[in-house]
Length: 156
Image (cartoon, rainbow, N blue to C red; front, side, top):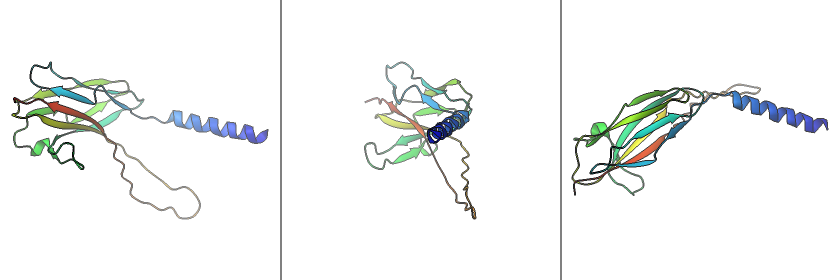
């Protein structure tokens, strides 16, 4: 009986610890959107449904070789004459905050283009060893990104 009570107490305390941790959670309204032609202007909306602030880097890339593994992408800054622009490139969302990003069509391309927009949270993750003996330190890098695919219709 004491063993079961001990496990219940341990499980309850672990649950309280996990609930006490704050985290920002990003929700995107669309995983893919289509812009251009006679379509109405597209909206790219992001929302923080977590309980702490999210600091996001927004990157836009032109997919040069769709449906290949790995995809060849070119950053929007390296495209000679981009036909689509997403702004802002850095974003801060408080808990429960929504934001509509600007999707600006600069020109209609000759052929259909595929763009990827990636939202990467700026997180500082610290991992420490606990136990007896020496503590070892190793660099750890974790990158999580949320993505949207934008299909831009062409003139042809």
